[in-house]
Length: 561
Image (cartoon, rainbow, N blue to C red; front, top):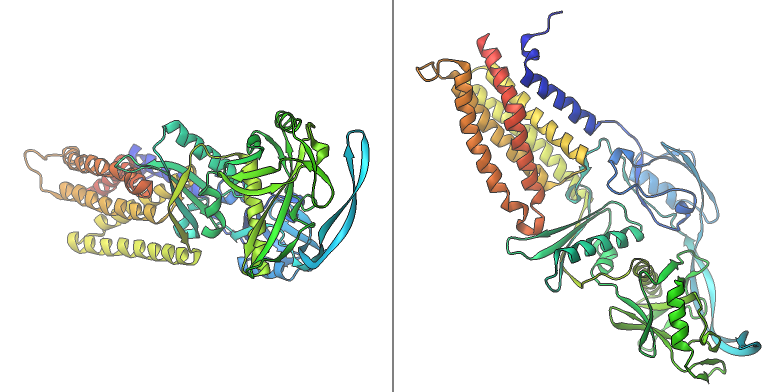
């Protein structure tokens, strides 16, 4: 079978090759189930072997849950319906497209203060002697309030490798700025530290990038999919400088001084010795605790600070050091604890951190306390930011609205192509001119989506606006080419090559004008319009160097026939 001459043209071959690469990058498929967005560290699912997707991984590489206890999972509602019916201490058989997991459900426990105090005898070592001490503590008891969440956050299984931006899948967008102007390397350190902090918090679908506006103001833009503003605002909006001081001297701080932070239930949670109770003003308060392991250097520093302190007797009769250990977060005192006399001059590497939270109800107090604990654990592990930040803007973006945006954008794009094709058909009264335009416009959209999939670029409303601009400028350029090729031959336009050359002279002038106009937009709006500018530049570049030359060949071939 003889291959049509048009398919032997180099410009058509390049277009077809690029389209094949784009489709391969997009990789359209038809998956059923729910994809894992992230797995909370130390949760039941994490212990069973499930992990969050690798950062910036392609959507189709995310593990997809297909069944829970033999029940098929097709939608997010199916998954949460199956999970909500689980009982305590039951085994979940969770199957994904890659593996199967056995997860044991755990009870959700709260500590309740009984209102009584109890006397407890403890052994305390002083020098080489062990002495019995009697202390009074608040009596608490454990209450099972339900089944603890297994720690998996899911979303609808992706059908291709195109990463949806927050506008389309929901989440939170936060714009930060340093309180004072700093060097560029400091901003780089802040971005790296925030990245570590968010990863330690159990988040994987995170975009962090530095930016600036036309006035030179410095910004950091953070986009986190599938999360709400209130859950993350305090984590990234504070410097997170943690210091433990004894007698005004810092004995250790968050970051390098911390070797290990406990997050498991056996060494962290609501403090069993204090639990929760009501304050004098009717509020509810709870106390948390968790243990940390200090580095050997920090432990030695603590020993050197405590060796010269006096030993005194507390109100409960126990022997303690004359100075308390005080915990400061962002230079604010958050808690202070007595130091047992046995720690005098001793390089102890394992210590206990405590803190609290207040709420209008008991449940609210427990939630606030555990959130405070988790935030402090993360800050201790990752360290403080090199500069204080302030939140310029924080937006919640609804996934429901995102679906409607995407649906509207697709319908608008299809309608625009149909209307343009109809107008061109009326204008030129020839399907031979309208059909290549439609093919070219669709090719440009596919190539843009392929590049976005290959390089992991988010498809958001700004990018969609850029695609619409590209299609619009493409139609303009194709009309220029059609008018030149249809123009009657004159002394200056005696052949197809001359006509194409003249058309592309006009097109290239418009191309460079568009690119120059888009460059300032990459910095305008603190980088939020960056996606629009980059999409437009890439799109018009694809058109000028790949699709529009191929369009000229198609039009020339069909007009000659």
